[in-house]
Image (cartoon, rainbow, N blue to C red; front, side):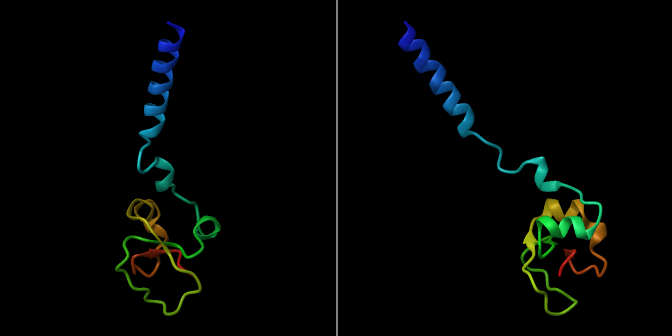
Length: 86
């Protein structure tokens, strides 16, 4: 009886842990300024992989995330689809 109960519990636990969400709410964090955003995402955040930087050459490649960009879109001063690029 103990072995069956233990096996059922273990299986349930493993199945529960293996079904993790693909995106969490942490991926849509709003930063208060570009300095804070660039501590985590050095190249800034792009809304998709097809955007071009209007400001010319940048030092770092931006992270692509539509949700993260939408949460920080006010920090895209030149409206090129990349927030806080550098």
